[in-house]
Image 1 (cartoon, rainbow, N blue to C red):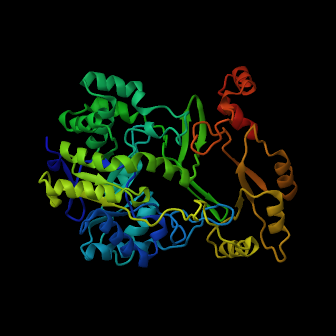
Image 2 (image 1 turned 180 degrees about the horizontal axis):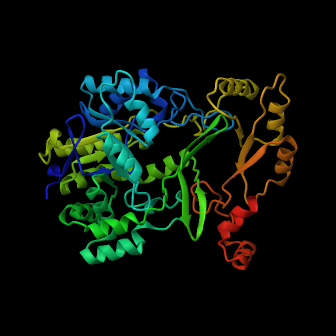
Image 3 (image 1 turned 135 degrees about the vertical axis):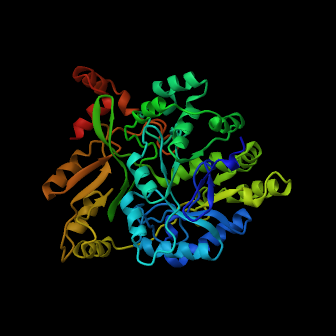
Amino acid sequence: MDPKYQRVKLNDGHFIPILGFGTYAPEELWSTFLQPELVRPALEKSLKNVQLDYVDLYIIHFPLALKPGEELFPKDENGKMMYDSVDLCRTWEALEKCKDAGLAKSIGVSNFNHKQLEKILNKPGLKYKPVCNQVECHPYLNQNKLLEFCKSHDIVLVAYGALGSQRLKNWVNPNYPILLEDPVLCAIAKKHKQTPALVALRYQIQRGVVVLAKSYNRKRIKENMQVLDFELTPEDMKAIDGLNSNIRYYDLVLAHWTTVLAFTSPKVKRFGSTLPNFFMFKFEYILDIHLEVVKSEAEKAVMRVIDVGYRHIDSAYIYQNEEEIGRAIQMKLADGTVKRGDLFLTTKPGEDPIPEDTHGNITFDTVDLCITWEALEKCKDAGLTKSIRVSNFNHKQLEKILNKPGLKYKPVCNQVECHPYFNQSKLLEFFESKDILLIAYAPLGSDLRKKWVKKENLVLLQDPVLNAIAEKHRQTPAQVALRYQL
């Protein structure tokens, strides 16, 4: 079946193909370009890269602003992310102007929760509401409540990570179950003589969710098109609904000592226990991982998916593949495979990557942290944050803040790497003496992120002492390591 006839109508009258191809990461208006005056230039730059006059869909990547500038991930002298303050309603007005100018047919958002969506929807003078909200969505995180909210406002939910995240094991928690090995999915797949991947994709389509399927394998790309050739029964749908457990493979915590901004599932219940689901990664390493795979394969992959019938292409400037995608599209337009009107291209522009000097080292800036702390105190006084804190500070850096003349509020906590192999005992004693809470990140170690973890490091959860204690209490080594911190 030709997928161009399998489309969902958007609230602005345009149509989006029900099945899309994600070029590994969706392309959106990046977080350093949320200031209203930067929105259109960012889009124009992406259009130049992909060699097109307009995009079908222009969306805000995150409801989170980073400091504007040449860096994708602006950092302070301590390597911490630098955030910006922006009114997303003003950003949305800039997107509306892009639509009016004909640079984008439709405009939407990504990774927004219902409250952030309501802020846009309730904006005085709203001209166009978001046509879609692109979020992680799969049987283990079915987003039912968000889907209901979006449907009630005629907003299409677009699912990324619809098959889980098997190919990103070097930054996804290795303890997470593999979605496509789930026995319920496998049993339903066997009944319909399909693959578990096709069942997971079909589940979304029957819920009215647009799906982004990501693969560079020719066989799987073609196989995914078969999702339009069968239907799941109501019993199948109910069984898959029952798999929801709030597991977020792409769980993102952007932690900075100015504040904490988190996209996290409330709780994940697995292995008989209930734990907060927080998972932190460093952007620059993920960028490297993505570039290794995407840069070399994007052009051929886009040509393949167009050849087998995909018409929905989803990309990202942040992964530096727009030129490759543009060349692929131009070749397919030139050889007559498709017309421009047949394609649906989503874009989320950004800017240049992390700045480096001539030796490939990241360039840093100088700042007086005491002056910065005073700015945080003003944010607290203004009611913009309830508490203010730091992260990755040692005791000397903390003392500098604590001994600052005219200190109004001291840090409520310090977030640092802390686990049984690095228990931070002395730092913890210092914190307790100053009534400062210690928050541990990486309490389970960092098993598979070998891109940026020393290869000679031991695997914490394989430690014989932890395993012996875990066996004694009939718990997992991970639970023992977490309980140790508590």
